[in-house]
Image (cartoon, rainbow, N blue to C red; front, side, top):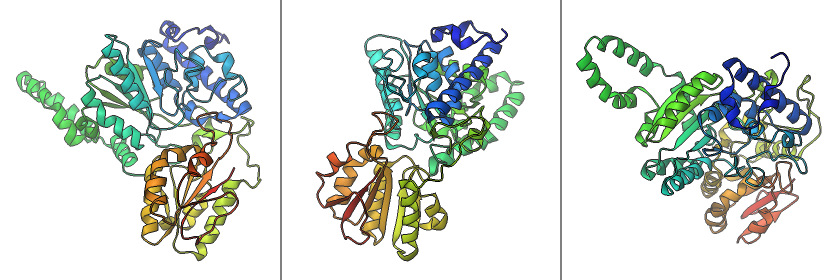
Length: 459
C-alpha cells in the first residue's frame, strides 16, 4: 500500500466490506489524522469523535447504510461517520460558512443523517420511531441508536427505554461508554455501568458452569434455559434485561473484529438489544486521551503543542470566581449544573464548596426543579446552564419556579450565536423567558437577595 490513502478510495460505506483487517486499521488511523488536522485548524469536538473511529467503521460494516439508519445521540461523536459518507471535501470546512455541520444534519445529508441532532437524549426515541415505521411499511430496514453513557441518564433517553419492549421493534442500541459526557459522569447510572465493566462474577460463573455441565448434556441444555435468570443475579446488565432489552457486552470499542462480532449478533436478534461498548475518549491523540474534558470542544490549536491557555478572562471564569467569592459570605448559596461544571466555570466552586455544589448530569429539567426545592427549603440556588439547553427546562421554569415565585437564579451561559450552529445557538432565551411571570431578566448583574426568581444572561 505504501502511503496510498484508503480514505481517498472510499466512495460509499459499502466499500469497507472489501477491505482487509489491516486496511481497516490503516483507515482508522487515517480518519483520526483527518479529524485531528481539521479540528485543530477550525475548532470543533475532538476527543469524542476520536473515541468512536473503530465503532463507526464496525457499524457501517455490519449495517447496510444508508438503508439502515445510524442515529448518533448529540452527533458530536460522528465526524468519522461524516467522512465515510461522502463528505470529506465538505468536512475540510467544518463549522465554517458553506461547510460541514458539527452535528448530524438532514439538510447536509438526507441519506445518511435521517435525523438531525445536537442535544442529548433523542437517539433512542428517534431510532425507535424509525424502526416502528419501517415495520409498518413492511420494510426490513434497521435503525441503530448510538448513545453516550452521559446521555443515558437524560430523561428523554429513559422515556425511550421504557417504550422499547412494548413497541415490539427489534431496536439496536449501542451504548458508547467512555465514562464521560463533557465532564466526568455523576450519579447512579454511571456507577451502575462501571459495575458492569468491573464485574467479573457472571463471566467466571458461566465459564465454570459450561466446563462442568458439558459432561452432562441433558443437564447442560436445561441450564441454558435459565441463563437469562442467572444473568439478572450475577450481571448488573440485568437492569436492561428487566426492561425487555437483551444485553450484550461489554466489548472493547477499539477492536473492530470484536465490535463486528457483537454488532452482527445484535443485528440478527429478533428482540431489542443494547450493545455495551467501552471506548476511550481522545483515543489515538495522547493529550486528548489524558485530558478528554479539556479537548471536548476546542478552538484552533497546534496539534504538536496541544492546547495552551489564553489567560484571558471569559464570562464563565468571571462568573465562577464571583460565585465562589459570594459563597464565602452567603452560606445559603448553592450552585447547580447539568454535566457542565467546567463549561460554566464552576470547577473552583465545586472544589471549595463540594457540599453546596450539585452536578445532576444531563438533566436540565431536574436541575431547575431541584433548584426550586432548594429555594423552598431556604437556600439560594444558582442553576448555571447553557442558553440552548435551558430550552429543555421551559416547563420547570414556568411551573416550578416562576408560578411559585421562588428565589432561584438561572445563569445562562453561551447566549447568542455560537460556532456550533443552529442546534446550539442561544438565541431564543429572551423570547421564551420574557413571557414568564415573576421573572426578572438581568443582563448585566445578579441580585442575590431579590426575593424572586431571576435570570442572568451573558455571552
